[in-house]
Image (cartoon, rainbow, N blue to C red; front, side):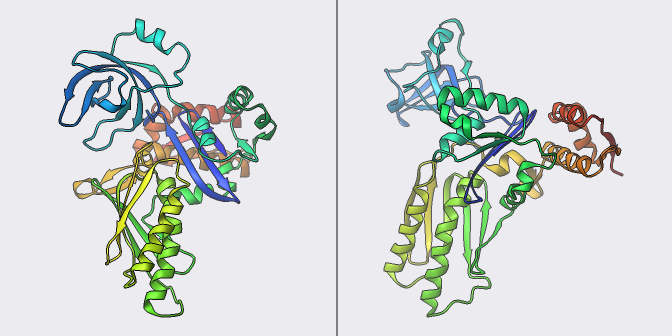
Length: 384
């Protein structure tokens, strides 16, 4: 499912009506994954066995020398592809091994001095289609995006054009499929499991901590048997949550303690098996006797909470939805209200920052397009 408004594209992959992958891209927080740059080497660090490459971002990118096609020296120009987004104090990860460059990439590099962006990476449509098996159906809710997807599929895989469907229902495509509810849940730390147990997923600056709790679980057998059953249930759900939330780096999972080494190996194996479906490489580094497991997952794109929320609270340790996220939510609510009240006046009443985002900020173009489709303008009012 692909849902688009100017300034925001959301793509969801569902299998048996269950969400398995989600990509959200916003113009005010664009993903740089897969972009091609003409960069300039600013330093070669023999200790890191890597070069720092200026590509025009706030931080230089890190290019491992093993990813370079030739020996590099300070001042050299080099074409690179961005493999991992920057995070916290780390710059983006780069490669110079480019096997299928976009047409004209090297010609652009000859005329554009570094640092310069040469070509954009895959958009959410391409990225989502590449993330899973061949889809049975592709549903798009925006006419322009539908035309773009049709052209893209015709060039890439013509048989998929027959599976492309345009959905112009005034009610949100994601809302009708339950995806909106799932996105809300993905911003919460607590994840309920079918048995009554639950997970607590809490990203912090240096790692992501996941705690497995027995909750209301009322299983049979010994305490070890129950712990093993809950841990196996958690090991099946955690890879899905990591992928949907786009969490990366070091992930510490505190499973329920099990006295049996065989049980710990079984849970670790189940976790590894679940991570095999992930398009981002991930490794399980083992489990201690207390049940603490360490996982590392490559950062492909920004985490979901980084796109939709902003820091708040003491030391910025909390998160709240940012004004642009809330502005797009307001537009989706306005579309829903307009469908239920044809001909009526729609008033969006919100905090000043949200009104600014709708009137002249990142969500303004989306507001104008939606007003044109509905044939009426929205009234704006600052909440008091």
